[in-house]
View 1 (cartoon, rainbow, N blue to C red):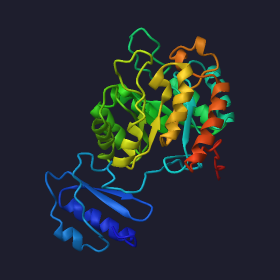
View 2: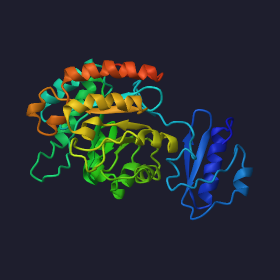
View 3: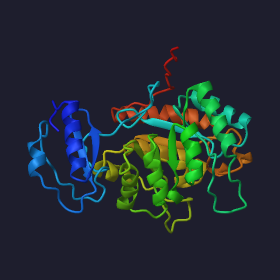
View 4: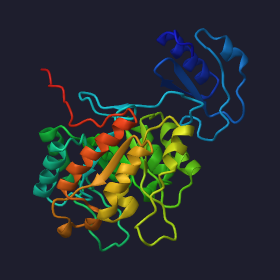
Length: 346
């Protein structure tokens, strides 16, 4: 659409697209709105569309991931969280921290207090844990979600947690600020579509053997249902290497940013699986241009119920924040310290 196109003109174009039997996806940008068209089997007749008031041009998107592509939207997507100054995407680098699993209320609050004091804006914690072994700890379920809701109230941290199936998704939508789709579910298309029907931000972790195109197509599944608040996360892929848990593929960050407007985070905890490698790779993630870092933090990792060896201590997290702040400044970016939550009005 033209930069000066009115909301009424945008709506009129969307209505016209729907009347043609297709689906319209309005993607507002900093300067102008793009409208993606899906549901068409071939190229859409441009003539009538180009003549509609407010339309600047009609562009054919050749990629399969139409809505996630920069062809559809040039501006970077920024995910905002109402009532706070927290964002994912844009100039600020989002920092997500917390334990692999919520074990007890005391454990979760201890960690949340420490990461909040060091400046984190987002708290991660597993309530539902898809584990390789059926005998491993599977998570506390709704009890963990309730604990994290209390943490949000106490510290202002926005909550990111994983949904593993349709049943858990409904609970995560109720309690969390961001729905995480884990690596094992990156190609669970029914779950992605259901997440797309929500209007909560969705964070998709890259599958253990997923290509760049497959990764972006998973985002497309969510966006095709009308949810455009999608965040990508590189968490390592499986290779022949045995010196790390996975191989953290930092090259995918600039590759994603060239092709897509969606923000991308880096998870060096799962990407390496070893505490001594987490902070160096977090530094590298910021240096390569990631929009955020997700790390696991535990005050007693030797007693953790899951992923203790890759969890850093709160003191290490505090040092990491100082280092990331300095690296971000070189790139003319910023690591916000803490979160400002607007006071509720009666």
